[in-house]
Image (cartoon, rainbow, N blue to C red):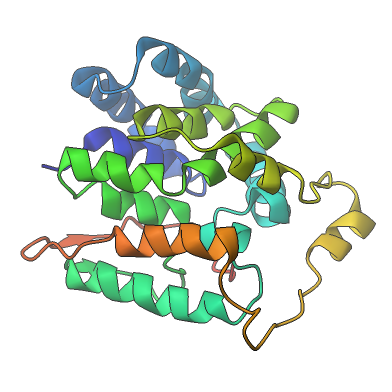
Length: 244
């Protein structure tokens, strides 16, 4: 059974568009009707819902780009926080895309498989217990993103708190701490952003794989099971189209 709440959370992390603004009353109603989120999580989402519904579209789009496109530590691509620029990232992308396609889900050529809204769209099609297990696997990433957004006083924090609340298991503190130890420059600090976006060296040999991070993303990949008969198109996005 599809989980509407996850579809809503996926939509909220998409690029702001007039269509998204117009859909806000319906999205609010879906969250309330399904009542999967704890009351505290629904209350925390209210400011973001209100901002997107009534805010100036250009301001919303500028804020979105500064947060999620310009700031590497807030990237909405899961593997950015796990593989970085290592060679393992390409194979992880291929594997994840294959899992989506096996489930009957089509992916826009402009988007990468590890884009969080796309991942959530897939998870929303899975049986509820399995969906919660899938959310638990990148929960350390969601928690780190929530903390970074809290530091910026961003209402988008609420989306990642909601995802963590739905996850079947909470992330280990050391995994979250490892992510939060990474550089987190302000979007207006151009020099720091340039350094953060510099390509990390590609590693080969026995030390290239393994380790905590690779093990975590392997669990994300292993948890994605094909869903024969499911055919659901991904929602359209705004004109970002950048790689992760």
